[in-house]
Image (cartoon, rainbow, N blue to C red):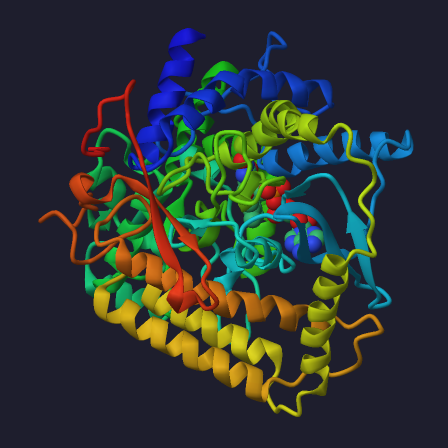
Length: 578
Ligand SMILES: Cc1cc2nc3c(=O)[nH]c(=O)nc-3n(C[C@H](O)[C@H](O)[C@H](O)COP(=O)(O)OP(=O)(O)OC[C@H]3O[C@@H](n4cnc5c(N)ncnc54)[C@H](O)[C@@H]3O)c2cc1C
């Protein structure tokens, strides 16, 4: 177990390209086993082996099988486990639940976080809630790109509001672009779908070697299954023989982009590569035929048995793919392309998960803590659960102990009045604006700037342009956005307008951060900083720090604080998966 934890610690620091805080990652490795026990106790149906013990499989960026899983829906099952446990506490009266409420602002009293202004999304009423401490657990901001795998409601607003009240925002440009998503199909799409990384355990990624084959495929004259083995480029296996298809997400995504940029993309938009299960179907099929005493050379038998194994492992994902793309992935390779999935950046927190505002904490994806410049697969919920179950419950008490004699905080303090008035003014301004464009019009435009200029690869020129373009888009938004309805009713357009307003500020800080970090690390690829083979080139001498931005009235005026990263237990090396 000790060895496994050391390897986990090492893989996570390396996976994050030596841009995460060493002590945090060590703590994450230490509590990781508790998390699994906790989740099992909550009833998460992790896969088990024949003997009844918990089973493991491999994930990107690691060479050992150590990921506990629940078919192709581990994340969902973990969520259900945590949610059910929370409901039990709601049932016992220990937690009061405010469904369909949105945190609109933080209230500070004498410099400490003392409550929030919330909006009831059903009737539009603003509410004041006071507390001795405030914890932000509002998730990541991948939707700044408009299209992402995140839930439609994911947003940056809570994190951004506390940033504007004094919480530093760390590494905003560290974004994870996941390699296995269903490709974008057209302009009218509002959501992207993730195909679980687990598929890379068995799927082989390739594009045709010959451009004439690519052309024929795009014209519908050639089927991928008709392309001979020697005419396929399994580019991850070729470039990274040690890790092959299981390189970390940033590496796999960039490699797909590289092939597609060279013209080898296999769908109509030229932005798709194949994820092929034919070899796995054959391998499993032969094994099963052998086990069952059937003819291993009977192709039909082998295919049927192999498909059954794949169905048992990934059936739900295959079904989802077929429903969306209308192709049967058991018979023809899936098409995939990278998409925005996770944000490693977020609210800066100290080791106790407190932000730079006393009494205001940030946990889960909303904070920046453990993943550095790239997160390894399955580590998001690991970190979120670690924060919520094994870190915050111990650290927050330290803070609350100072307030043991402070009674209930009144909500009629001037600080609450002022915060509520400013929220009301912003919402009123939206509905009274006589604009012409929808909120989505602006969000889509912002997403395009972000994807084109702050996406999988970035350069100084593009980032400088992005900063100017986002700024002018923001100005236009305030002048010309049209929000129908009123503030005192269920008004999803109004809720969205407030969120997009925050994305339009975050986007600028994101580009500013990416411009400032003139090195490539993890998911942040600066074209100016690459090896001759096109791999990310870090600049440890100048950039071994966390960028923590302080708000100064406008994203362009944000000031940079640097938290130096020191590695005592780990030797800093060039990250290689070859
Ligand atoms: C498709 C998909 C699959 C994934 N699969 C895995 C996996 O298998 N394993 C893994 O480890 N990770 C996985 N991840 C990543 C992981 O799910 C997320 O990182 C994780 O859910 C983040 O948890 P969180 O509690 O910090 O935030 P979230 O789960 O995003 O929850 C934040 C909550 O806060 C609410 N909220 C936001 N703003 C406000 C506001 N202003 N007021 C009130 N409420 C607000 C949101 O509505 C949401 O309910 C996956 C992510 C996606 C998108």
